Length: 477
Image (cartoon, rainbow, N blue to C red; front, side, top):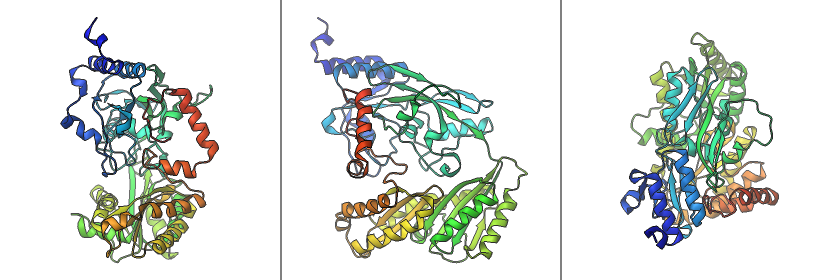
């Protein structure tokens, strides 16, 4: 009898997995595993005894097959930049982490078909750079793009700043390669924009948070690289004026508004005060600001004229009271650093209760006003910090602690505050998760706000594809 035969089924499977991926493909010491267990906001701390790092789809399939035969749970993980704990294993599941970081090859780029085929571990910024080298654009863009991986982006249906023009991650995918929970590989790497042959199976895995299978590669769409990008930072008359300005911008540019971000004064002031290099490009202070871009494909296009005209008209109409147009790539980058600094600056306001919500674009101002009133009634002195992708209805509605309240007391109100905010969101026809996903963080909200029939349908899909429940257990459902 071989030593492996003498082991328990679990131990034998783990030994087999080590053989599959080789000595460079696994970690089992606490020091090596620790970075994979820490959720970046500190809300979840994972537990795991083995991190597996395969470098081919075939190895992923072999690992999954070994786990399936022994009933070992698997937590897929990309760059570990998620905000809802979807990639963090829980102690009770005795899971392994399957990290896709070594699968970082760009398999193909086809400028004529406007597609790029990438492995799941490719860092998003590297995909953007590969597209740019071919004078193409891969438009998915978010603050973690220097470390997040495309497999994680797809499994969480990431959003970012360009959703208004190009859509979420699911809108950027033509085909997928997926390892199923039994270890089989589904090769759905089609480059077709039309394929009317039944269910669109790839969409089950985009946004599935690794609960139905493991994305190992994808065919993604590319677009012409913009040659004429005009960026403006404006002071709004009020929240409602953001809607008028957005409509005006879309009309004036022929619906070529790439991004439209809303920033409140509280977070902007904190960014200017605390983040090095952040300066106010305007001459006076406002309660609310907008940062938006128009993008044209031609270097000698008319976006500059469109931007100047629409801002002049917006000033005359009283929608905005001041505006600055970026005059160089450097100044454009400075404007976008303001948007990034808004996120970073919140730590200087103390503790924060964060919400990633989606609402109909036309209802964004009404939601903010209604939520502000509800939060302040519940927690006097609280400081709402709404900001985000106003152009597609995704607002990061965060609450900073009152100045005269200690952190522990403030955070003790998290559940009540969050329920009030989400009750308003759902009452207004919105979603309690716009782009961050469900993971562990929002399981109660899934049970509370999802229609029972929707949940039943999701459970049926999960049971059909993963009957043993080994794929990312305890997440989403």
